[in-house]
Length: 431
Image (cartoon, rainbow, N blue to C red; front, side, top):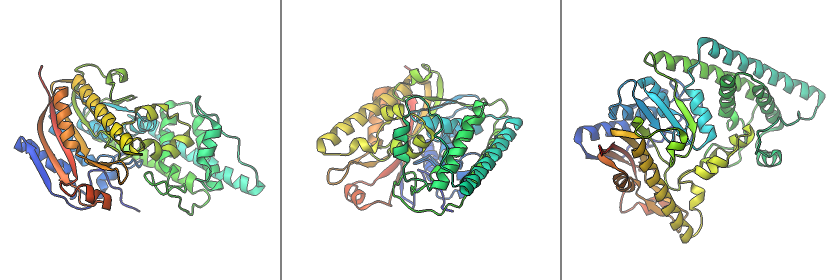
């Protein structure tokens, strides 16, 4: 099995530079450098349930939460909660967690990974998954014997076109795999308990790319995989069992009285609309998008399309998406200015919801925005510090690690100055 890596796992060690208050800078350095951390951490609790591009390393998140000085019972916000790594670690810390994300898939995933399910609910989750898995296997066998056509498409949410869905999914699954997956999805849709239904939907999402002809989340290259009949259905049941075990371990380890996180679909540039009030948060740990590095709409389009999840909010709210930086010099300049405005708005919102004296840890990396020959290096650390100061967030300390595994275009762009990953500690001014 391929080892899963996180954003803060450099492929090779890079020098770490520190600034600011020495003790806190050393702690940030330790949080950023996770090269000596065992691989098991990546799958502990519910961390390993679902792949997600550029997710924060759990140990980085854990140490960053401690660096903020957050006390047990304090409120912790991640306005780019993604796959829920910070929220899981926040639960283990005993925090009152709030997660916001522009992706409806991220919201479903973060909720499932932090679901405070009772023993009975976890048992029901496993029972339903096994039953649905068995139905999918039997459906496949019956269809094979009778050479029957695929079952009619399941009902989709409003705003999701079956024609567009069919077009986007064409060719991504072997026919027998597609039949099993559609059966699984139809059975999940009939579940009456919303928590169980949403958890099963996330479990199904977790296997989609693995049984498809798509190479990975971040690579749209078509590859052939040998997927035996019944494999998708059985993998579905196995993943549900893993989720149940992970949830049990998570809430057994969480301090008594820790509430389940509140996770909401929303725009990080407008946290009030996502239900986060002024001065309502004690600490923030988050990783905003890097300029022109990832495109979550494209990365998750196969999953979003198959599951019938509308993408309008993600299309409108996703920040720093790679697709926005494609094109000539004029479009690139506009995209860079837009990303800087978006980042300024995010930091201003963070300052707005933090209590005076509250701290935020921001993980962000330098990037190469655009496509050669127009691509330009973006030194994100400097930009965050400038915009944070304007937003009312004071710099406390930082640690920045050099990235040495670079492509040819990156090597050329970052010749004068190294490409760095930054962990920055900020503090809300008292005023």
